[in-house]
Image (tube, rainbow, N blue to C red; front, side, top):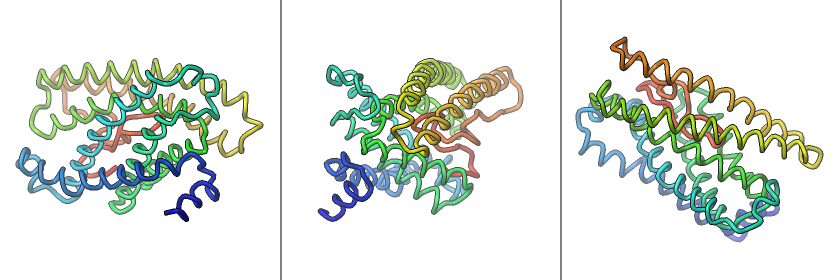
Length: 286
């Protein structure tokens, strides 16, 4: 353990990570346990028709949504707690500053993204999902340098819309497509996506790009390209996905042919700086 702590701190340069390694381990093992044990048992008992008898790919996709929902229910309240209780002056250093409580939240997120990356590799469907998981893992582990941890915690709030996206998917799979309950959930999906990802997320992204520009000479070019370019691209995608969501919901509730929401096919559900969590059709995995 001492060797690993030294490797993480000295070789990888993640100087703030050692005190949170146990949280990181338990997070990964916890999400793995939900994926492999808890979710299959409860899904078989509570949703026998929708879960049992499906292909292994479809069942794994179902389990991914369960793990994603568990992650949302932990990470969003945790991030809110850190943000609302952070010490005075926390915003004075948004690039290199650190908050010990944020470390626990980022360690949980890193454990989740490690699980997500391994699932994407072992249940390989699309290279994009593998890259997505590894990118999320890299971004949140890199916050332990520390680097832009202030913004990392706030970007985790974008997961709030994932809660309603997973609900929408579950209703489709359990015969509740087009119901009033799904319509209400769809309203909150659009509301949270717009308010958290586009309004609040847009504000955070602009603020982040401005402050990143002020220190770009002090950081490796790779950091500038990864964080700056990714931030810009993902904000553009948020607008595109929001437009597609409105289109899909309008067709669904006007009696048109069933149309999948963006995120049910092509949008990962848990990006640290962007869209919802694992894709949701029966032929894809996260």
